[in-house]
Amino acid sequence: MRFYGGLGYDYVTLSIPTPFPRWNVLLADDTAPLRREKRVWQDERRGTIETREDFERYEWPDPDEVAEVFHLYYRLVERELPEGMGFIPLTPGGVFENVTWLMGFVPFSRALYRDRALVRGMFERVGRVLEALCAAAAECDKVAAVTMGDDMGFRSGPMIPPAALRELALPWLRRCAEAVHKCGKPFILHSCGNLKVVMEDLIGYVGIDAKHSFEDAAYPVTEYKELYGDRIAILGGVDMDKLARMPTAEFVEYVRGILRRCAPGGGYALGCGNSVANYVKLENYLAMLEVGRRYGRYPLR
Image 1: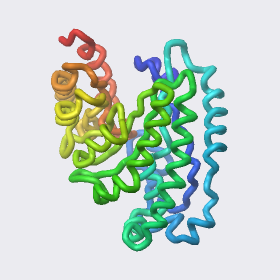
Image 2 (image 1 turned 30 degrees about the vertical axis):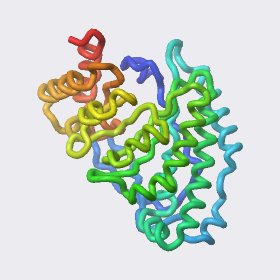
Image 3 (image 1 turned 90 degrees about the horizontal axis):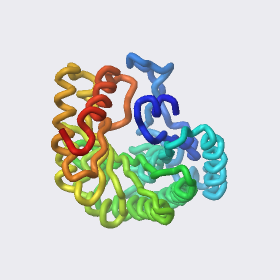
Image 4 (image 1 turned 90 degrees about the vertical axis):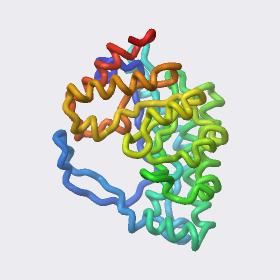
């Protein structure tokens, strides 16, 4: 909280621990400058749940119990929140992410064609828990918005056919968004990948209020602001590669260019294109915040 407040933010992210334990992960050495002991990777070739038998044996969390645990967690940290700040809870992954994490992407892809009923069951089990979490978070007084991270794509498009996303994932995203909207709070979607083919679904059907995660090489924030900025808020977009490698003087001008193109008309918040990773240049991250303080207020200069 001191970190966020000291850097000028008026909110603190509240990361919710996962209620979906899984063993299909890989560990590797972390080579970043601010390294952790180990970096955790998803094992895409193996799943904690690959078959109907695995599905039946898995100890699925009870949505009501998960919501109750969140309220205890929230009350624990609420009393430490500085005056004038709010929370933005981050769900422990999204609906699509948790299904593919639990199954492993290769077994999931096979099941998508060989056992659609199993895949539907996975989305229902995961979706109900995340819906309950979103509802529990949104009803808390100090929560300003709820963010769901649900990476569904890569540089050229979605990871699965758009029709499959519309059938399996988006209805549960919609229910999560509705649970947040019932409390009058915005629903923010963080999703990596070029999702232009389903953006109309995300805005018109799911009802997202804001979109985060952009990459200059494939789906730059300036393009999304131009296409969708009159309907949803556009968040972040300062490219991760440039945060990590661009010389700082050049980087400052790059960030000012994003502000010049995205700020007019409102509905834009300056920030990183993805999570602030432990391999970015700290001087670039701090420079980005300083550009926002100096040039990112209305009337624009």
